[in-house]
Image (cartoon, rainbow, N blue to C red; front, side):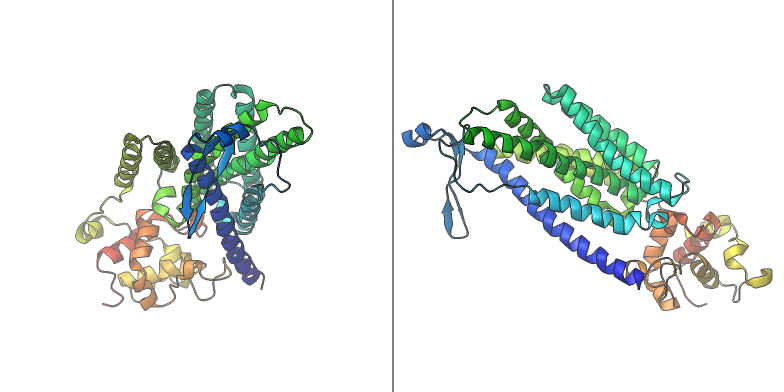
Length: 417
């Protein structure tokens, strides 16, 4: 029952997180576009009121005329709409989802003992410290070097690279990518909570008191807001990456993460400049080139043909391929050996009644010959080419056992002689 309830928590939190993230990113992208698309008004009455930029738009059958004041209108409206709950709810739902999926199942999802051997408690504490440290380092950089946007950008980018390297050498690849994304998302939401909204509140309070607001609040808020818009696409990739094992499963996965994040920043820069009427195609060309180059680099190496593989293959280990008492597994065929490996190493997650998970992982069942044959390509890709399964190699599949699966698949994935 506990596993069943966790599955529902996973589903509902994931759904909520996607909804709130759409709301936050949508409003963020809209205001970046709006800010960069405003034109200085020519109407004397607007200039007299202090309007610094305006824009006419049509949407959904209506016309809209947003205006931006250089400082504020002479008379503040009674009701102001604030944009912050989108950020807070996205972070809270995301952290809850991280806890339910990764922190509560640290042995399965956080830890890969071939990367770094640690206990579940240590892994959870390291993950939480990783998120907190990311914000503290970023905030310190902005406080100390905030006078130079370029220097802050370089230092923050350098820290993200260091964080990616550290995460990929502490956690499983899948968790590492997600944690780097969660760290950046924490920075984004903390920017809103600690700097952008408090600064705006101080400006509003000063205006209501008839005082001139300190311009530093606007400057700081703007700087952090700009950082957030560049962070958005890298975070989205990190969140989606756990569905694509060819990225986080590579031996140089931290480089993969950095390259794809850099590509997304270049593409985002193109759109930011485009909003200002500047078309610099080198940014998207560079971004797409990085993505294509990374895809070519990650392409799996073609294994030897079946006869060559058969000649060079090692004998699978007795632990998975021998019957009780050390006797050879019944049948002796390639498929019988594969079934023995799958039973010993894969059934814990991919059977009708898994023991490591409340329900079959990703709905993949390997109980019968037909089911195994139907998923042969996936098993070969995950267990042989990328060596990502079992997760964190929790069931200790050996290289010899992976060779057995490879021989079977490359020989046609037959389930009978």
